[in-house]
Image 1 (cartoon, rainbow, N blue to C red):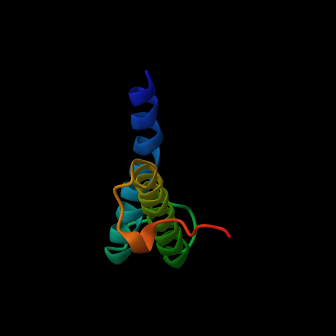
Image 2 (spheres, one colour):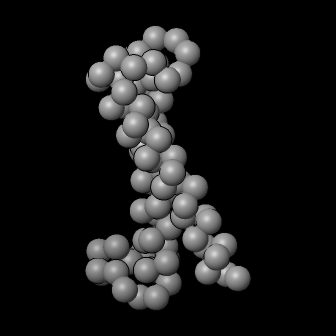
Length: 80
């Protein structure tokens, strides 16, 4: 059950990032998906892509830190 929840948690930002890439691509071809100007659609596409990929990368980094599978420079700093 925990793996299914983790899959769903990772699927939502992945879909968001894919939709952001689609918005960026449609902006270059002049296709209106969102109401308003094309520059607004382009900014939303960049925002969705960065947020989706950022969440996914942060999730993986956090998981790998717990398992000790990251390079020393990505380890959390020990507080003195």
